[in-house]
Amino acid sequence: MDGWLCPALFKYFDSAPDNIYVQFKQKNVSPMHNRKNMKYLMLIIFFWLVQPVYAKEDCSLSGIELEEESNDAVKLYYTGTCHYRNKDYQMAAKQWKQLSQLNNVPREYEELQINVLNNLGYLMFFGYGVEKKQFEAVDYWQKAVSLGHTESEYHLCHAYADTKESTYNKLKAKQHCSKALLIYNGLEEKDDEILRQIKKYNNQVNE
Image (tube, rainbow, N blue to C red):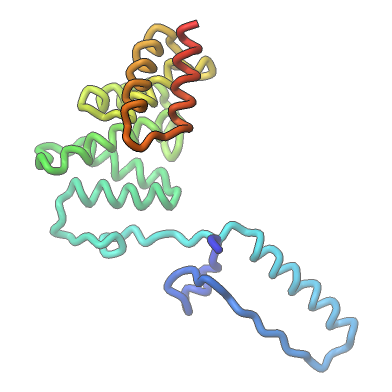
């Protein structure tokens, strides 16, 4: 069962256990007192069961199996990714922003720097961990697309085609949605939900 683990229990567990067993023992108290305590106990167990159990990942270098000597681009990318999985969006944005501004990134790590342009655009467009700035988010995606990032094309399709967004632009939507449709139709492992959205937007702007 996935969910929340009381921080006090980390004294006994390194991570959330699959099962927790509880033992009940009879105490020599009045029946009325027993019933009252049982109500409290049942409430505690109920809230423990219904709470979404969530133990955060360790985002230190050792926690993500990296070393101080690891390349800066690698450290920033994967620590940011760890914070994102923990829903610490502000920390994720901070790490990815630093990576986006690095100079002289080795060729083998350039893809990581391009990926964070897409990621930063996503955080900024929806205001996760940073101030919501949709036009700046679009700038990130446009730069990522110019460097060959395919997912950013889908994000631009949404940003320009969705009439509810401040970035709505029907002419630009036609361009980016048609490209996104070609890209996602050509994938070996197709994402049906994203394809459905792209087709919806593409039909909408071509009516």
